[in-house]
Amino acid sequence: MKQQSVVYLNSRRTADFETQKVEIEHFCKYRFDIDRIFHDNQSPLIPASNRPEFIEMLNYCEYNGISNIIFHDLNVTLKIPDVFITELSMVLKSGYIPYWAQGDFISGGYDSDERRDAVFSFYRYLDKFSVQHSKGKRGKKSAGVSSRRPGRPHALDQKGISDLLAARRSGKSIGEVCRIFSVSRSTVSKILRDHPELKGEWKGPVAPGKRT
Picture 1 (cartoon, helix red, strand yellow):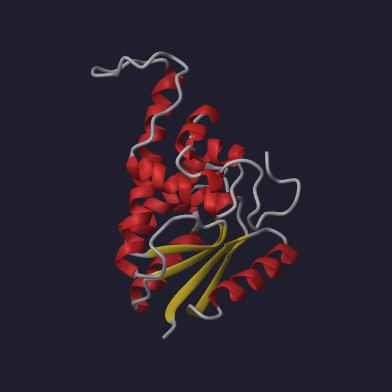
Picture 2 (cartoon, helix red, strand yellow):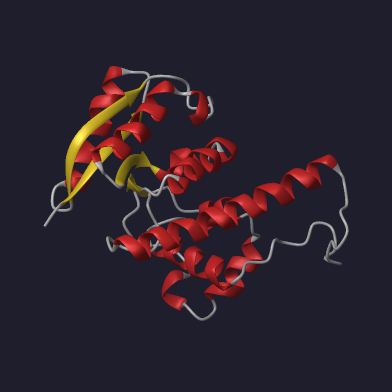
């Protein structure tokens, strides 16, 4: 049985909106019934809390008892991490479960509880790293900072490693994985030692020329 959902699309061009809509409908075909599509044509750089369409979507979900929100492309939203973290925080705090039609490597499948836990773990990782990165940019050192030498790659916990492997299996290149999880290529290589099928030239569902 398909689950009820709403769709949130952010695009400023009609052609882009129509393309996104087709991809969303294909993604939802056997999984979700689309109750309503929210089209936001504001700049993606604007925080979600300042986007009336985003707030209206959350209120609509609450009023109609809909818990699933479908977005278009996780890769695109990750390019603006601060905005994405705020957006994801608002969705999770409201009790909703986000999915992305493109680039979704987060685990949990379509089981509501498992998916919610997986997305929340990913959010906590991103939020924690964002805070650490901001402190580093300001050049401030807080009490209890580890003795990790400057420039050393960011360490991943077990959940981070699992998400990294899932991203690789979904078709992300080594370079993309490094950017998403803020780790070095050597760190990724060490993690992939026990997963030889994920090393080397990718044979997965990615267009030629996208692997690095």
